Image 1 (cartoon, rainbow, N blue to C red):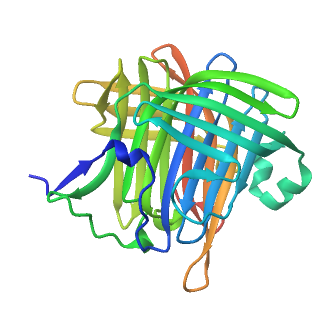
Image 2 (cartoon, rainbow, N blue to C red):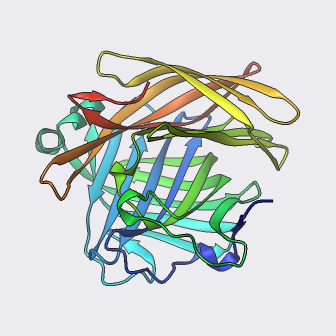
Length: 337
């Protein structure tokens, strides 16, 4: 019998009291893609109250292949809410209804790979006023939560090696509008959201592959392969089938890369207790992002995250979602396969 259990309460949708870890992070993330216009985006706020700032990211995949992007580290004084840098997330009804809004500038990239050099990308591309308003509705059960001991006590976590102590996900439906400069689009489609809290360093794991997939309201997937180093690897995910989750017992992702080590095509396989699944993906538009941190030895650690809007095919049906590949960069190359 397991010594641990996973707990998730409606109150976890709201912000928690931070622990004393200097790198405490509480973050919420959403993505949504319109199957008709082949556009979408993802939105993230990560509060780091003990460091006095939030990480705010807005990334838009426009129908013609351009990408709109903005990142900031706005100052925050506490962890009371997700409201920083012009972005606001609100919980209207836990596990069922939330909202996203963003009002601020957005950088428009005709060549998104210019973000490999962020400083130059921001200097050489135009920024426009941007407004996003999207209502989010859950279309699946909740998956995940906080792993605790059987008596409810929290786990002992080394903040230096932590990526999060609690994490949950849910497939969703989103409806709203996106405005960039004088252009405006209505958006209506499917996506996935997640939330995590606890100590986090982006450099705490060697690499991961994360696929979020919505074929239709009836069928969707989430694949996750996390390589933590020292031979530790976690494989798993979810199959959403007619409003019910099946847990993946095993999965694999085979990737084809371009000359910059960015994913182009992929094949994903999964097995549940009752069935096997195969999904193929083709990246439509991708932006490479990075995070840098100096460790106590004075070494600069670089993490790259390639964020691809991806077209997925399953049993003759076409859907959309994300392929998110995180790698530590060592000797100029990503660590992952």
